[in-house]
View 1 (cartoon, rainbow, N blue to C red):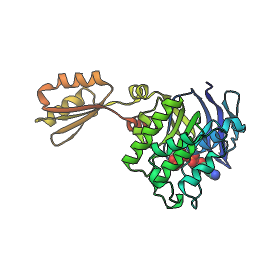
View 2: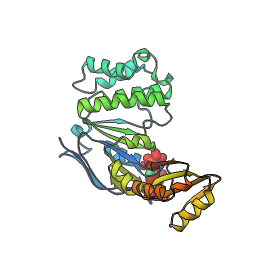
View 3: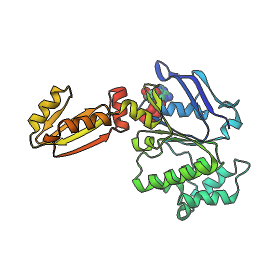
View 4: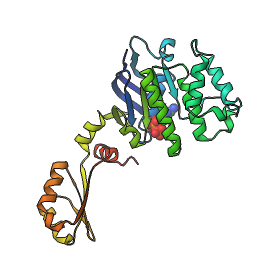
Length: 297
Ligand SMILES: Nc1ncnc2c1ncn2[C@@H]1O[C@H](COP(=O)(O)OP(=O)(O)OP(=O)(O)O)[C@@H](O)[C@H]1O
């Protein structure tokens, strides 16, 4: 199956450069996350991937197809940040109308989506009267109605509670496996990005890192250590003498070290001053901080 190729993609709005020479090769069937803060250019990229926003320069290709081709758009499903369904129609009327726009949507598939996303009790309710989480579940059904090869989710979890997020992700992961679908997610939620096969960290319209989560962690996330000591001043002095930037608050001494091996060295060397400890690898936030100097959460 063809991969999605983004080549030297740029979008400027007057003087604002929203997307700046993006290059990405997205293999089919993968789960890709675009992680970036507000204004990073994620939604503008999604707009160009869907064909709704014209790039200023550069190109997007799915095999030989471009977003201007109907055949391209038929392979893409999108969950936008805003709802695109009719507030005055019921859930079922909205979905049936959408289904009618595609040649091969059978009733069984529509029933399956409605059922998996827990929409059955809501089918006769007007879309405009649904809660945010209910709407999002309908939006995902709409995006999946034509069995897309690529599903694009633009911050799908914003404002949703954990049970709703869990249901949505269970369904998406299941359908991704069944349909061998590529999933492109834009998100601020680090735990969602952590589940991805590959992460593009985006800031100011540019890719500042592109790698698997495990490589990003290895490269950028340090190990955070908390040591509990009955002689914290001595422990702090020893660590500082060894060149660590340690901090102390009462009996607690905290420091960041490069890797797990170094954390073991610290524990062994200072064992007589340590009663308890906690040591864990940094998360996506640590990675983001290391890359941009900013916190994402
Ligand atoms: N139509 C527009 N006209 C002018 N500037 C725009 C337009 N659309 C986006 N921008 C600007 O482009 C930049 C990128 O915006 P974009 O919405 O793509 O970011 P984002 O990463 O999706 O942010 P968020 O996480 O807040 O949704 C921002 O500075 C934004 O103000």
